Amino acid sequence: MLQRLITGIVIVLVLVGFFALRFVDPLFLEAFFIAILFLCVWEVYNAFKEGERAVFPLVAVLLLALYILFKLEAYFIYYVLVFVVFALTCLVLITFWQRFTIDRVKTTLFVLIYPSLFLLALVLLNYSPYWLLLYVLVFGVSMATDSSAYVAGKTFGRIKPFSTKLCPSISPNKTYAGAIGGVLGGIICALLVWVVFYFAIGHGSVGYRDYYSGEYSAVFEVYHFIILGTLGAVITQVGDLIASKLKRIKEIKDFSNLLPGHGGFLDRFDGLMFNAMLIYLYYVIVL
Image (cartoon, rainbow, N blue to C red; front, side, top):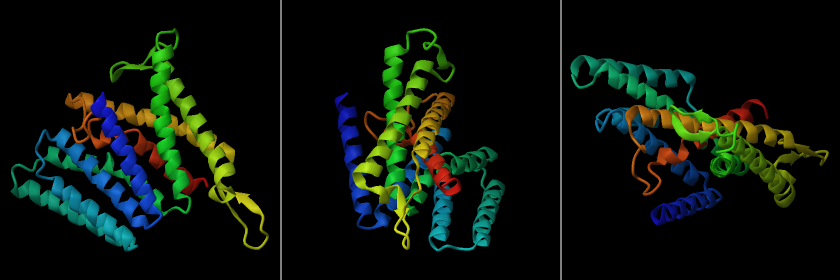
């Protein structure tokens, strides 16, 4: 318990530190989340290949190439070219390297989707003018969901009908009480975020003031926070169940032991990264 507490405090301090450095230069926070992405990819690949990490450098090079193209604002054709080269490399390795099997190709493609695609949202949010608000929503809603789900499960988890197991084959301890409590916690947290940014920090944090008329226009109305709190809480729990399913398939407790008392980095970001992608897509498409 003490080890878990100490690690948790260190994690919080590191997060706060990099968010503070974001005010100095956005690259600090970007580099931090890219490092998290690579660590989580390594954890998933390592878990699925049972210690055989010979192909991880190939995945790392591909992700790095895509990131460089993104930073250079390259044309779409260059992204296609990178994937063509990647595909040809895999085919050549299958042909001439006996250890490189079809199963390895499937695992390699899998880690490009999970967790790479979802963790990418944490990097992309850094480019929004409302980055602080969006990150607070991502981390706040996800953490509130986990905490309130735990408390509600412990408090009401033995009372029918809330004691019904949510997904007994994946996570036997999760109940409907915890799931409902998690959603309520996510909504409450999102509303608290709206209150803080709207009233305490100032209107400019959740909207903008027209240059000519001087009138305030809200970008994030309160109902957006309710929607994001609800959907964020649901998707956070779905992400947690997906990670539990993957670990159950491989018969492992945690993705790694890089964080003493907490498991691996992906064990901390499993639900949060789904929430990050949700909030990023909502911000880009809806707002």
